[in-house]
Image (cartoon, rainbow, N blue to C red; front, side):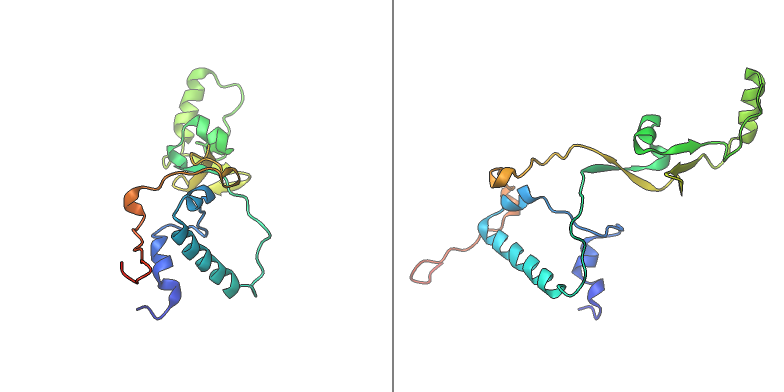
Length: 167
C-alpha cells in the first residue's frame, strides 16, 4: 500500500496523461444497473462532503473533441484550431522577388527543424497536442429517457438473496 494517497489508484488510473479532470457521460451512468448507480452516487457524495471546505468553480464547460499533434495536422485542421504555422520563423521575403528568387529565398530561410506555430499569441511546439471540437457520439440523456445497454461483460452480476437468506 502506498504511503502517499496521491500516488494511489486514481493517479495510476489516469496513466501517463496530464488530464486534470475525468468527464463522465450522464447517459452512460444512468444506463448502468441501479446497484452500480447507488455505489457511484455514494462515492460522489463522499467526495463532495470531503472537500466542501475547498472553493470550487460554479460550473464547467465540457465539449467533445478529438486530440491532434500540431505538426501532424492538415492545413484545414490548423485553420480550424486557429493555429498559424510559420515555416520561416518570423522572416519575411523582400518585396519584388520573382518566382525563382522567391523559391530560392524560401529554401534559404525555411527552418530545418520545421515551422513554428502559434495560437492566440502563444507559441506552440510542433509536438504539442491540441483539441478540435467534434460531435459527441453518446446521445444526450434527454431527461433520463435515453438508455444504452451496457456490454454484458462490463456489468458484474449482483447475487440475489431470497427471503430465506439463500443465494
